[in-house]
Amino acid sequence: MTLHRLLIHDSVGIAFPPELLVDELSDLDVPVETADDDTNFSQGDGVVTFGPAEGFLAADWVHCIRAGYDEFDVDAYELAGTTLTNSSGVHGTSVGEMVAGYMLSFARRLHVFRDAQADHEWHDLPYEEPFTLDGERLCVVGLGTLGRGIAERADALGMDVVGVRQSEEPVPEVREVYQSEDLHEAIADARFVALATPLTPETEGLFDTPEFEVMREDAYLVNVARGPIVDQSTLVDALETGAVSGAALDVFEEEPLPEESPLWGREEVIVTPHAAAQTRGYHRDIATLVRTNVEQVRNGGELVNRIV
Ligand code: NDP
Ligand code: 7N6
Image (cartoon, rainbow, N blue to C red; front, top):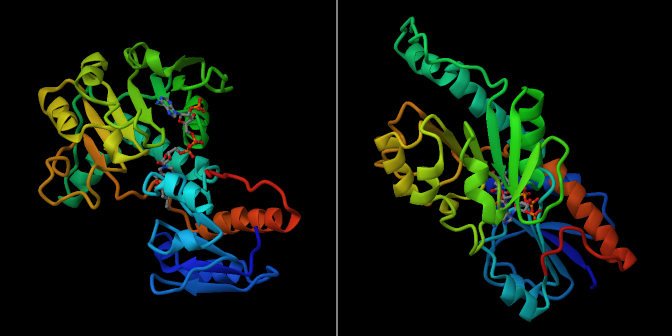
């Protein structure tokens, strides 16, 4: 692969101001420029982008600033001979802290107090409502960057962490690793179930009626992965019938979450706007990945996080 210029597509503006990344990469030995959908992409181009756009297949290399690359037509990239890389590996701390926050909020009732504060209300909790995370079981489904970031923090809070993944490889903070086919056994006794898998044909609709039936009635679902991994209307039913107690959701079948969604109005649902990975250092993490891969191109080495 040859690299004549690096183009920062304006879609990265969804995550951070594009000029921050241009600045961060300004010392590279390749011109770094901004681009939009009207740019003529061609051989020798590397493109850094949030999502896919027409024309990218003419470039040599496309780097997605997200871990999830489910919006990209991977087969088309392979056919075109365009290298695709993603940004898995940088979200363990941000998303791990976010999930710790959701769980602490549910246990310590922070969301309830904050809601009451809006009404200047000194809110007394029923005695049986608050609990502590210490000793509670968390099942993390997906034990990659996100899953491990979540597991490490839950372990530090004294939780009993189990997990689910495709391989059998152990994770230090995870007491027991289950395989995908044993999902029900893994989630059955968990007070919290956190989803951290990519969206694939296997994970789409992974959480539907049977899973909510298996989960404890006092359990909370946390989804920081992708919306379609959970059948959202079934989740709403499960919340309404009390099959599960609550949910913290960063991702949805449709984003932004439509105003009429019943999820907005439920006390035991925390809605965050696909914000679990946000941090003001994000552009620097992406710059580090891009810089590594520019060096790999120069050295004729294998690109990191290569999808195709
Ligand atoms: P990784 O590739 O590091 O990890 C993915 C994990 O999912 C792996 O442990 C893998 O298992 C596991 N997995 C894959 N398929 C299955 C399955 N069918 N059943 C159980 N486990 C499975 O990805 P990341 O942790 O970096 O990111 C995961 C996803 O989270 C992304 O694809 C993205 O969609 C989403 N995401 C959301 C963010 C947000 O802002 N809310 C931020 C970042 C990511 P194994 O290792 O054994 O193969
Ligand atoms: C943007 C993160 C991902 O897949 O959905 C997230 O990485 C986006 C800050």
